Amino acid sequence: MEVYLIRHTTPLIAKGLIYGRMNVPLAASFTEEKDLVLQQIPADLDKVYSSPSFRCQLLAAEISKVYVESEALYELNFGDWEGDTWDTIDRVECGVWMEDFVNLAPPNGETMAEMERRVLLFLKEVLLQPFQKVGIVTHGGVIRIILAHYRGIALKDSFSLKIGMGEVFRVLV
Image (cartoon, rainbow, N blue to C red):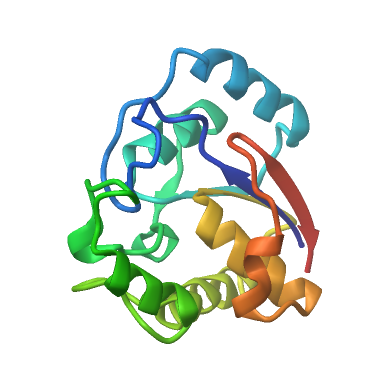
């Protein structure tokens, strides 16, 4: 199966905003970025999946009139930090989390290990389907987890993978 991992386009946000699951508006570059995405994926995808986030739904609707939303494709839940900026959250608390983000969660959020479980369970279910080509419109964190899984990169090292806005990754599974 060919799986096209598609990151949403650029959001219109303040620098440093923690917006994991927040619905945020998209930048004016949406049309241009969307056109670039469409050039990189086949027009005949068997199925398109999307995170329920607005920034993903909008792109998914441009790829296919019919797409399936899955909560498994949400970005990491940053809990109480959502809507804050990195420079305004408690430095000690953030430092502890950053030392072991795989196993520790932001206050009332989720760990990267929990996110990995939900993402890989979703992917396992998709791979059981009789599709040849699938598009998944989602977030940088979700894409990072899938790529790390297939490339044998430890979750703690997955931020070495750069995932740009509107970037497309093709994975053969």
